[in-house]
Length: 217
Length: 326
Image (cartoon, rainbow over all chains, first blue to last red; front, side, top):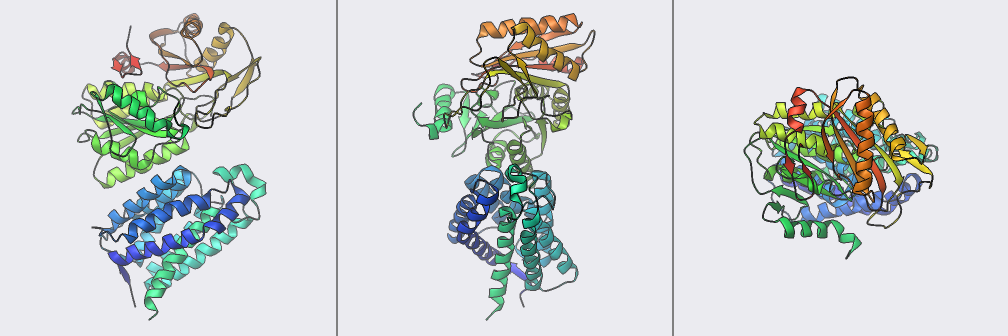
């Protein structure tokens, strides 16, 4: 059983994450049209498409910090706007206090998600319940933290986080947007899933998918 | 113009062709730096394009050492801000100054985090001078005050103050600075050529912000005396100005306002202040932010103490704006 990912596996995992986002472009666009201007899918696909190309060129990264910084920076530059900076923050602020430089174990994932949640909450001036990406990120971070405390295997921790993120994204349907651009759609946003939370759920889900596939012979 | 999608790139190319002896541009990024790397705390600023001379004009001796230039009405990327900071002299730390707008704030905050990971020390001051946007100062957006705060901080840095000191001066300038705009006509977005809004012929909108913040009130079209009176009354109340206070005043005639009109507005503001017993120590009649065919005037007042008084009197110059104490 795999308990931590090597640098090259982390790179491969991020390729899987990028693929999941690029493949979901149509779906993300569709749900964003209900609560915004419909550019979320295109922006995410553009940003993660560039990451995928970059990571497939199989460059060697000296540390996981360097890898995350490059991924986050690429997202900011390619996507621009609020989504770019917030998903860029996920990677850059996420890796900030992680001590391990060559591998990621479950406790490091927990650290990344907790830092990312705190930074995005502060940066976007939002909290869980506001119908934002935090509604998937926060439960995922909590699940990872608890799993790490219990010393669960990596795949099991990611499975729980992925479940919680999906449930969190689903729960945004009932919420009323109170921040960001979707705010202008307040009442009209009820009944629709938040695109940002959906993207976070896709990211966590594909992280789990990658680790699970590794363990399936 | 040549190509509306290429406005910022071509603007920077023009700037570099004209002033390349003094400035350099980052490779592949819209960051402009003074060639001279002075061994002091550096000041880095930035914001969206489309309101020139802000922000491309805010880099120079006595102003910022580097500027991150965003696209039209868009924040510069955190990666550009970080790259500007890596290239300016940073051994004594860097003060980041930008307007309190979500995009600018988020990108500058993230840039500061990246730089900290790389061991470059930086502090940030968000400029919150648009008094129309909130009762709470920390929640206000920036208006015409960014280069006023940058200038005061740069003067302190040039004097040899350390990063904490320079930040303190910038924060103090910001805490004592209020701006208010009066808009008679809104211009158009230079990219889309679409009007940014409509103002009735007999109306003046007070408090419109640079990123589309709505007016705090609408008054009937009046004379310079009436409009200047409204602006000064609000600013004086906001800053609690009274007998014997000293201030620096900046009158920014943006867009289609003529120098003649701006001087008349200056007359009204200064007369109003003098009737309150407030002394205008420093007056700057400058175009700071100018958006297309907008017809607007912005008045900024900085309440002074002896320390700020010393710094606002320092000279600052760039090819597009200057500050001189007369």
